[in-house]
Image (tube, rainbow, N blue to C red; front, side):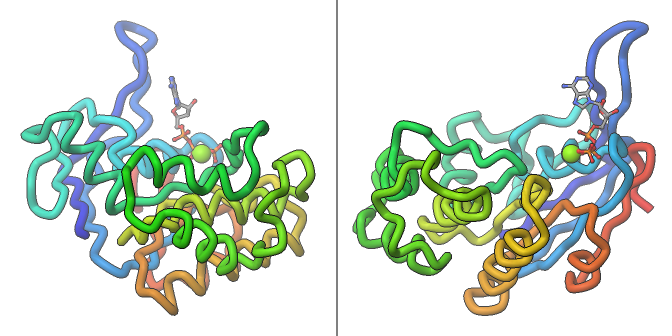
Amino acid sequence: MKIELHAVSKAYGRGPGRFWALRDATLAVERRTHLAIVGPSGSGKSTLLHLLGCLDVPTTGEVLLNGVSRASLSDRQVSLIRRAQMGFVFQQYYLNECMTALQNVLLPLELGRVADRRKKAIAALSWVGLEHKLGALPGEMSGGEQQRVAIARSVAHGPELVFADEPTGNLDSESGTKVLEVLRALHDETGTGLVLVTHDDRVAARATQVLRVRDGRLG
Ligand SMILES: Nc1ncnc2c1ncn2[C@@H]1O[C@H](COP(=O)(O)OP(=O)(O)OP(=O)(O)O)[C@@H](O)[C@H]1O
Ligand SMILES: [Mg+2]
């Protein structure tokens, strides 16, 4: 899938407290991309990721999904596109603490009525190296393992594009390296597009495209 931003700006708040977190961003995210978004804390990286992933709407400007204006689509249409074609990984894992690894990965597949979901969930967990942890609860896993469950959940339905916002932010460097290897293998082996927000220059160096954000502006 292709996502384009045309002169997109995003403000938070209203009146005198209004703050422009992103200004006049124009860019295209092509199929099979491997894009790193870097910049200081508070520069607007997550804001940009949320707009690209249609988790948020711009204040001004236009977002195009596969050439179609987001504004012309209903919320339901956007969420169907998001559910089918996109995956998300965040710094917090957002796993359900009461559910096993397998149940966590299965949940969105059930909501999306995806066919062969049990097989797909197990395949995704095996792919991130957790076939031996299917029945484990999040509290019984390390941070790196939990993040790999979150990755399995984000890719089990076979998205075209995966967004990851500081996916290694809560991990030590060894677990972080493993998580990044999984994400990179996803791109290299399956051609899944990857948009990665990172503070880590080594991670950015491996991307095919690096986007720098500073004070809400792309540079
Ligand atoms: N919901 C919100 N309401 C008000 N201001 C917000 C909101 N979300 C973000 N901001 C502000 O917008 C700016 C950009 O935030 P954003 O989260 O995009 O930065 P970031 O580059 O991802 O930072 P970090 O590296 O710390 O995650 C920040 O100054 C932040 O305080
Ligand atoms: Mg952020």
